[in-house]
Image (cartoon, rainbow over all chains, first blue to last red; front, side, top):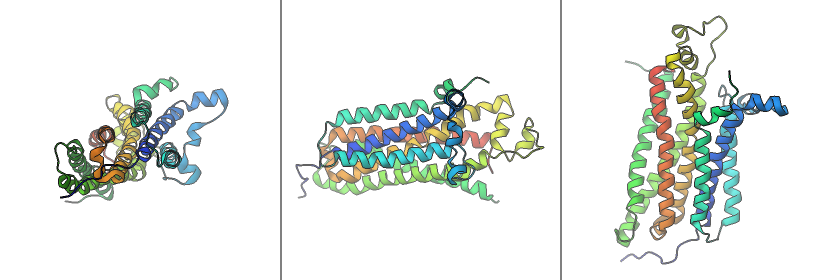
Length: 127
Length: 182
C-alpha cells in the first residue's frame, strides 16, 4: 500500500510564485495607466511614457506592437525578477500562507482593475 | 476552400490554443477540486497527480503561447496604419486595417475602445497566474493533498487565469467577427 509522507515541503516557494504573478499583474496595470496618462504626465514632468513603452521601436521587441510591447516587456521582467527575489527570500521557509495569498490576490485585483477600460480611461485626457 | 496565412494564424491563436486551454482548465479544475484526503486513497492521489501536473502545465504553456501569438503576430495586423490617401472615415476602404475600420463608425468603435483595449491587456494576466498554479502543483506533487490552504489558493488563481483568458477570448471572437485581420 502506498502512503503519503506526513511532512510536506515548506510553502515559501509557492508563496513566492503567487506574489510574483501578483507583481506582474500590477506592473501590467500600471503600464496601461501610464500610457493612457502619458500626455498629462509629459505636460507635467516632461516624461513621455508612451514613447518609453514603445519597446518595438526602441529595442526591436515585437515589430508593430506599439506601447503594448513595453507594457508586456516590463510585466515579464517584473514577473521573472520578483519571482527570483521572492524565491531567494522565502525558500526553505514555512510562512503564513494566507497572508501572502491575500497580498498576491490584492495585487492581481489591482492588475485586473487597472487593465479595465472604464477605469484606466479615467486618467486619459479628454478629447 | 482555403485559408490565408493570417486566417491560419488567427485560427491557431484563438481556436486551436483556445480549445486546448479550455480542455486543460476543465481537467485541471476537476482534479484540484477533488484533491482531498477524505475522497481519495493514497494510491488515488499518486495516480492522479501526474494528470494534474499535465493539466496545469499545459494550461500555463498554452496561456503563454496564446498571448505571444496574439500580441506579436496578430496584433500588429490589427493595428496596422492605413497609408496616406486612404479615407479613414470609409469602413469599406479600411478592410485591411481592422482597428481603423472599427473606429470609423460609431456603432463599431466600442469593439476597439472597450473590447480590444481590455482584451490586449487582461489576456496577459493569464500566463502569470497559470504559471504560479503549475509551479505549485509541480512543487508539491502528491503532497498538495495535505496542503488545503495552498490547494484552495491554487484553485482561485486557476479560475482567475481562466477568467482573464476567457474575457480576452470572448472579445477576440467578437472583434474578429466585426473586423477580421485576415
